[in-house]
Length: 270
Image (tube, rainbow, N blue to C red; front, side, top):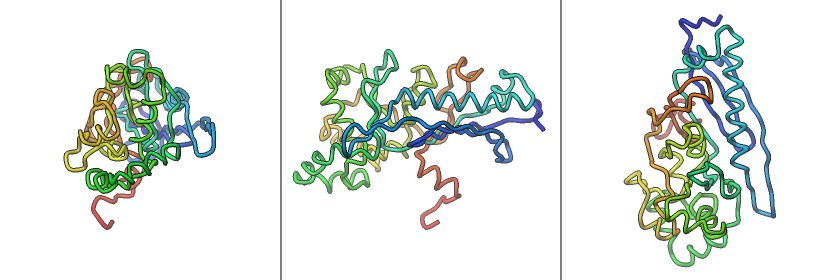
């Protein structure tokens, strides 16, 4: 039974390709509440896949609030439940690319989803230029349209005024983890973690930082990029009005890396 004096929860936000989920876990790792909502898939032309980043945010916030409501029904006030949530962790579909206005917090274009193939020709151009080995050496990734770099480059080129605004620091890029953190913190935190940054094709695996040579190659201004912070550790707090209290966001991980750790695979070969 729920006891407000003893119960505390971890709230996991699982933002996937077709749905947003939230799961509250108790200290024993048992599921105390779960909620899930699907959102729209957009296919504007063959090979293109888009999401509305605002719909991702509204569905993710809705399922988080639904979890809080379900915990409340178990026997405590909303404010008490919120303060019993000791931390939020975020796991997410990887590589999906969002570009938004820092001032308004609104996307400037549809999010380009990881499956999207619109930049295949750009990748072939880079391969013909002999850049594939350089990219793989720095990032560990095979040169492909799957990753975020060419998606972001495409947005900066195709959205009117985007490149100039990005260079001026007016726009922000992020994978879905960064987008959710920005919205959850009311725009106070623009961050990602290495497991997501490693899937952009812009992070140097040796330094765990954005690579200046790759930024030049893909013509990405550093001003548009999030800070890279540890996957585990408090990186900010949610705005109090969202879930009933300011809650620490204490974990970020791309979904496949999160699943690997969820299966207790902590060393090579496991």
